Length: 142
Image 1: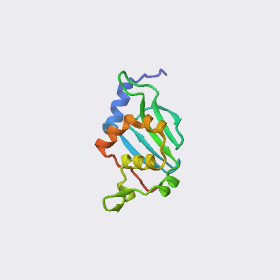
Image 2: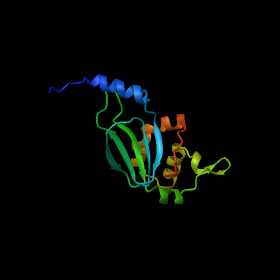
Image 3: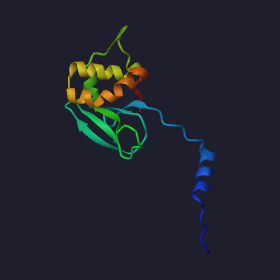
């Protein structure tokens, strides 16, 4: 009995017909309850993590960046449970509901309470995007 070789494209076409087209990745900020961390990523890729500064921030480096692409594609803020207890996040009508927390507001509050020039400089590349998009952190109950 001979083996039949199926071209890769055939398998991929069948997969896409069954599960639909893949949606493009959009920048995301979410709470990872297992790590007790907020993760922000601009693209979906394999990464290397780099601990920076003194406040539990990890830079996410793309392992295979395309030409002209930024080296760092996001960051993680660790120890969020304790951090959130220590920060007062004020909105126009008092405390900001946790479900409406913008990542840029959280960063601002962190740097007010825990100034860290190294971390602020490392995250500076993300600030314009976060201000423009006002990306909210996704807190889902597991």
